[in-house]
Amino acid sequence: MESYNSFQVEQKQVAEAAKILNLDKATTELLLWPQREFKFTMPVRMDNGEVKVFHGYRIQHNYARGPAKGGIRFHPAETVDTIRALAGWMTWKTAVVDLPLGGGKGGVVCDPHNMSDRELENLARAYVRAVSEYIGIDKDVPAPDVYTNPQTMAWMMDEYETIKGRHHPGVLTDKPMQVGGTEGRRDATARGGVITVREACKVHGIDPTGSFAIQGFGNAGQRAALLHHEILGGGTLVAVCDSRGGIYNAKGLNSKDLVTHKLKTGSVVGFPGSKEIPRDSVLELDVAILYPAALENSINDQNVSKIKARIVCELANGPTTPEADLILHKNGIHVIPDILASAGGVTVSYFEMVQDSYSYFWEESVVHERLDTKMTKAYHAVQEAIREKKVHPRLAAMVVGVARVAQACKLRGWV
Image 1 (tube, rainbow, N blue to C red):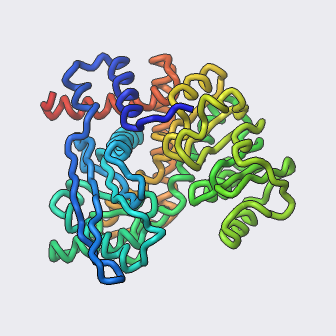
Image 2 (cartoon, rainbow, N blue to C red):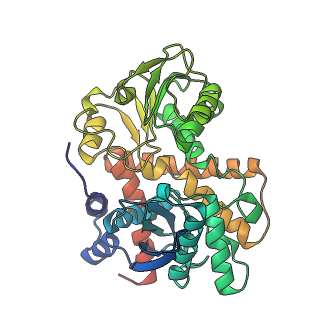
């Protein structure tokens, strides 16, 4: 399997969309690159008394439609190109769901597994000190990502408010409820994805109560298992895998019991009434709907010809390689691309920003209803682009996003 530079993949997608939209050279060039990039070093005192220097980034890809928005990841293999790509995809993701936001992303090169809570707090606060002039409710609003969480956001918000000397809860999203978080955030990514599956079943005449499989059983995978039945009115979960292995039962796995088992044991393996199967074979089962919710490039040139699902809903970032994408389309498999399928998270983060700005919080049912409206509208905007431009779904989603951002850049007089 080829290895991919994710930033080059993202730039290629932008260039393809720009060509279909007949964008001029200057506009295309502007959209290919981040508007701002910050690189900084952060000295942090560790528990043993030593000072360790960490390297961090914050990249603001585009803010023509509003403040940059995107997560901060703590990861040992973080690179500037990964963050550039993810910042770009956030630009297109927020535009596809028509939020008044741009795209951004941040990262720190570190291994959180080898750090104490106090060290992680010190690092989180050091990160905010480094970027405090460049973030804000009207500039750039970070959120959690890989190996960061609502607690990380609470520390960061507190540090930002300490620096500024006043309350600014909306500067970071996905915070704990007690300090300005919103109802409906925990399951937002999966809920948004399942809503798009519901719409895809209507458009493509697929039985929403058929069988489905989930690759990856972290937060998004677990929530999808639970919400699939609720939103689609049924369905049989036949297979699931996580990093330790896969399980299968043709008659169905009980989603609620399986989530409990995973949280209790740390894996889906050993779930009563299931048989073990190779982890990767979960992708190749004959099911109506497949949710890749694990790692990037999971569907690739090695296994794409074995994919039998009728709908592939990408809850992970970049689970399908560019070549595999074209083959799935050619084989009549409908892909709901990540920038659409997983946009529920950033949509509810935007709702959190809105609620924080006027200190009035909505009922969970209101959050769910407004998320449903946004995701349904976005799905059909992409469907329209598929029909009008005669392109595959990922390119159609990029066309929708790129067109909206390009228009904002032109209205501002940038190009």
